[in-house]
Length: 240
Length: 101
Image (cartoon, rainbow over the protein chains, first blue to last red):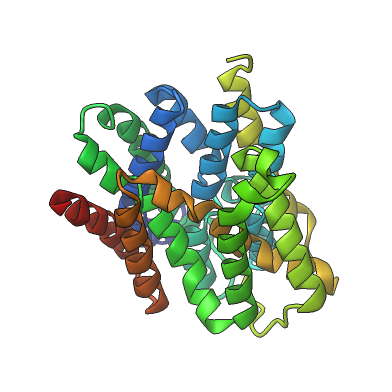
C-alpha cells in the first residue's frame, strides 16, 4: 500500500472510533426492537451489516413485524434511506477522476450520516482509504452492537431495556432538531410529522395502514407540499 | 409468519445498497430540478419525525418517562449537542424517571 493511503487509512480509523462506539450503543437499542419483532442475533447482525442504517432498519423491522408484502420492505427502505441519495450525490463530486471506479462501489455501501459528515470535512478530493478506515470501525460497531442488543436484551431487567430503547429516538432527534432550528420550513415539516403521526390512528385511511406504510404516506405528503410551496434555497453546496 | 425473514433482509440490504451506489456511480452532475431537490432535502427530516413521535412515548414502560426523554433530547439537540450524548441523556432520563415512579 502506498504511504499516503496507509496514512489516510489510519486517520480514518481515528476519526471513525467515536462514531463506532456511538453506533454500538444505538445499535444495541435497535437490537432490542428486533428482539421484540422475534428476530435472532444472527438475523440482526446480518440486517445491520447489509444496511448500515438506523432509521431504515427500524422501519424494516416494522415491516417484518407486520408480516407485510416484500415490495413494502423495498418501499419503506427506500423512503427511510432517501437522504443517502442526496449524500451519495454530494460525495460523487468529491472523487478525483484518477480514483479507480471500484472505490465508488465500496464507499457507496457505507454512506451514513456520520461517515458522510467526516468525509465531507476532508479537504480536497476524498481518499477512499480514509473512508475505508472509518468503515473498519463503524461496521463492526453497528453490526455487533445490534447482535448484542438482541442477546443481552433478553437478560437485562425491564427497567434498563426500557431506558435503552429510547437511544434510537434520541439519535433521530439529534439529526432533525439542529437543522429545524436553522430552517423554519424544516421545523414546520418536523412538527407536522410529529402531529400527523400522532393523529394518524384517528384519521380515516391513515388509521388502516401499518406503521411502515404510514411513514411512507406521511413523508410523501408532507415533503411534497413543503417542496412545492417552499422550495429549498441551497446556501452551501456541501450541505445535503 | 408467511414471509421469509431472510428474503426481507436481502431486499432491505439490496435496496439500501442501490440507493447509495447509484447516485455515486451514475450522477456526476448536481441535480437541477428545484422541486426534486427540495423534496429530497425535506424527506429525511419528515421521515425521522414521523418515526420518532409518538413511538418514543410508546417504547417506555410509562408514557411520562418517554415524554421527558423526548423533551430532554429535543432541548439538547436544539443546543447542537453530539449525537451519542443526546442518545445517552434520553436513556438516562427514562432510567431515572422509572426508578422513582
